Amino acid sequence: MNAPTPPLPPENPSHPAPAALLQALSERFGLQYSAALVVREQHGRDESSFSVPPPAAVVFAESTQDVADAVKLAAQFKVPVIPFGVGSSLEGHLLAVQGGISIDVGRMNQVLAINAEDLTVTVQAGVTRKQLNEAVKSTGLFFPVDPGADATLGGMAATRASGTNAVRYGTMRENVLALEVVTAQGEVMRTGTRAKKSSAGYDLTRLMVGSEGTLGVITEVTVKLYPLPEAVMAATCSFNSLADAVNTTIQVIQMGVPIARCELIDANTIRMVNKHANLSLREGAMLLMEFHGSPASVQEQVATVQAIASDFGGQTFEWASTPEARTKLWTARHNAYYAGIQSRPGCRVITTDTCVPISRLADALLDSVTEVQASGLTYFLVGHVGDGNFHMGYLIDPDSATERATAEQLNSQLVQRALKLGGTCTGEHGVGLHKMDFLVQEAGAGAIAMMRAIKQALDPDMLMNPGKIFK
Image (tube, rainbow, N blue to C red; front, side, top):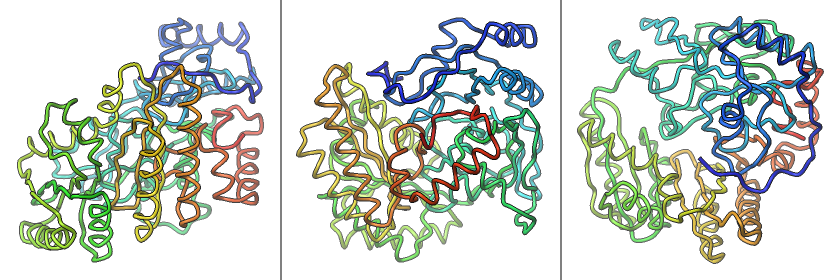
């Protein structure tokens, strides 16, 4: 977890929680309520580098009714509400920038209905992705969205998460079928059904997916499941240059190879991962790939990718066919963030991500790497490059205003480049606090005005996770 860094400018109005509200919450929730500083601080930090005072209190919801009651009490006193899952967000989504009450849904962790025949499952918002896959594995099915962290399904829906499998299976946008949401008025609303498609009215499910808790608190999620592939093969392939690895990826996608995962790690990050995980991966640009399907189709995919990689100087294909070997490989990839932190003791991380059309990936990624290398900052780079998405982590001295300014300038240049190339300011982290200005550039004033109008209509008192997405 990042330690506190310089606070945000005081741009947001504060909504102190009156003693009467705290008393009412304590009476209603008993041991499910806490105003202890250590608990509040735990719920007032995420993996971002922002430092904000903690919420006034925390409610540990155990049911949808708990959430509704907490929201109604907060609304009565005009106090903000901030949903909390496991605290793994990277852009300040769960920070109480205007004060308020944190509603922790982690205890709402029941798998409610597994409909294996329809390839769907309904869970409470606090169920994590690993817990879900453990619950459904006996059915021969799995849930593929993997953002790296063992995030809750509610949080993943709220931030429109994706991850390593998105190139084949899509993001939360494609995989959420229905939601249960508590509105700003404390009413319980359901959106969508278990049917695969609908033409009935506004698509409120898609509206809530990616709303980052600003329109309501998600309490139940219905998602798609997929058959476990008959055969799975993972591989690493090293390259002499980052450009060769990126161009291999572009060619694989443009050839229509149905690759399940295609992850990029540069040589700098490989060194960090090797040290952190006690591995001996070749220190060069590397693609980590995974292939799903029948044995024959997997072999066909592998042969095609090997041929493409060889055209770009790909070397030393190493295979991981057992579950244990694949788990070790992907665990090392997911721990790149922590490997980066370990590489510079006492550092803080400013993370960013962007996504561009696959044909412009080389233009966006290679120029961004050249810039950070010229800056002298320590960094790590990982990318879900199969769908044009990559992440940069700038490791800074928290006491150095110069390093912080340099990192933010690099972030700005990276995002501006992506927008010029037809991409987005965030591929999967979300807007939160860090990308608000870039969202205006990407979407335009008219779109932002429409978003504000939706927010005003659904949350007229601006109490649902205020100060996020737009100022």
